[in-house]
Image (tube, rainbow, N blue to C red):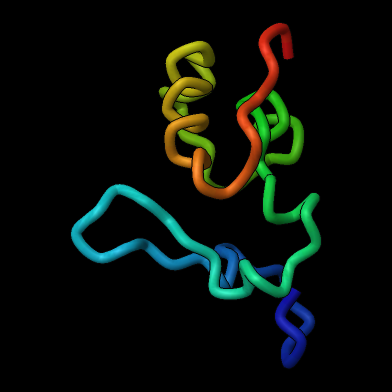
Length: 84
């Protein structure tokens, strides 16, 4: 929610695309609790939470999307355990 207007935001205000990369960073990363630092852990979690970064191709090919998510999040969280 926008603290000034009270309206729902359409994009996270702390989300930034890294220059010349297909990678996103969070401006409040170091101030977040571990649960937030490690989010998202799975494509299923992103779908459940209606994450704004989920794409149709991720929903239709969740196995491939999970591999990409794990690679993108490798420096942000522990790897997802097999079977999750």
